[in-house]
Image (tube, rainbow over the protein chains, first blue to last red):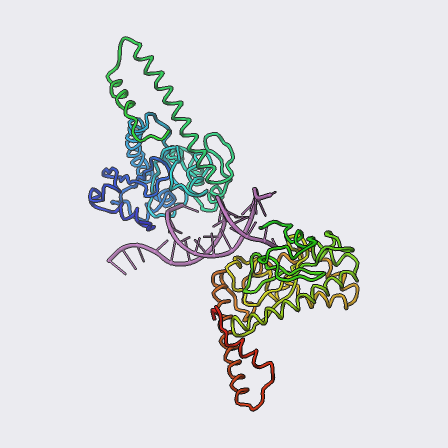
Amino acid sequence: MAHLTVLRSYAQRGRPETLPASILFNHTETCLTVYDAFPKAIFHFLVLPRIRPPLDAEELTNLRTLLKSDKKRARAVLKELSNEAEGVKKMIQEEMLSRYGFQWEIWMGFHPVPSMQHLHLHILSSDLCSEKLKNKKHYNSFHPALGFFLHLSDVLSWFEADPSFFEMKSQLKARDYEPFLKDDLACWKCGRAMKNMPALKAHLQTEWRDEARKEKARIARKRKFEESQPSSSPGDGEERAALSADGPAKP
Amino acid sequence: MAHLTVLRSYAQRGRPETLPASILFNHTETCLTVYDAFPKAIFHFLVLPRIRPPLDAEELTNLRTLLKSDKKRARAVLKELSNEAEGVKKMIQEEMLSRYGFQWEIWMGFHPVPSMQHLHLHILSSDLCSEKLKNKKHYNSFHPALGFFLHLSDVLSWFEADPSFFEMKSQLKARDYEPFLKDDLACWKCGRAMKNMPALKAHLQTEWRDEARKEKARIARKRKFEESQPSSSPGDGEERAALSADGPAKP
DNA sequence: TATTCCGATAGTGAC
DNA sequence: GTCACTATCGGAATGAG
């Protein structure tokens, strides 16, 4: 479903649990977490604030509309999204370990000028390995240091800064952010310039495989060291069990 | 063979008759006529001046190099191309009649700044209906009134004009002609603007079919009139025979 | 900054 | 203004009741 208001339709549901399991991942009193229909990484979720009094659909249209509404209410909404996101992040980390044998970065943040209506917090893994990641706009919109992707922690920090700084950041003008999406392609991890998308995608695969190899070796060393020690903590058993299940990992 | 010097290799052959019949259409002491390897119309030939003393390959590289060499020799070369082209044109006209039942325009002219080396006079039919005509550059380069396509008769007339005019025209600077190739698409025949190449190509087909219909009706009326007359000339028999053979005509 | 489809545009490599 | 290949860029439609 490629409709521009599909997220809003989810967010205004009185009974989100009636959504198909292929769409809904988790929900609370205040938030829904759905699978991104076109995931740009191995893990990619969206956390949506539910529409409920005193929050209306207009206020929750996007980050800009939220930030220009009541500041305390806005912060509360973001905190609720953050709470839900932290839980989702933990579930992703467990899944990383059980399915791929290691853990890698998870990013949480907003797009300044989204096309789809209704505020959505992206939670995605840093591999950016996905068939759905097809063009420069896709990639640059998630590049963690380019300027387009607004990390949740940064957005929350705006509330603690000077009100004039908050006002400035809250503008979120399309013309201020659009240029980032046209920046030259470069690996977010090593900084190397990439000629085109196929080259970038191949490189991202390599980066992720390299990280997998190094992390798995590190974990193996750690395990060997711990096995050579006389005592063990209760958590170790789980960790070893998770590590032994390798699943459909590519790296 | 899409090589940039293939025409020169033909033109410097001592025995052009050894060229494959799929390449060589006709030849004289001074000229070769070859099939355009990527015809942009139903009929599309190239007439090449043969390389022979005192003409060298450099002088015959393109129209600009020829025109800036000895003026009388240049005119002689163009006259030889013209003579050969007139013969080829007559053969095309006969083929039009025998295969398609009517005749339509045939254009003869040069491109000001060709990529392929060796002067070549284009002879092509005005339908511009061909799978090989794929983009705006192709089309605009043969548009008969845009300015890029240099009609042979016009080029020959430069020799009769004031020497300063000849000098001006002989410049043939790429930058003076390149803009024509980017002009908006418009039908050369009716002037209508065309949104894109598929629309233009469909329209060109329509134009040609319309012309075929009208010309065939005109010819049929003429024949009926002549049949109603008591006398006939010896040529009429041939013409009727040609008209009756309809061949693989599309229109 | 939703995707997908279509088409134009740009760079390259060819031997 | 050689072609053919790859990739990018640019606009338009898109669904649902």
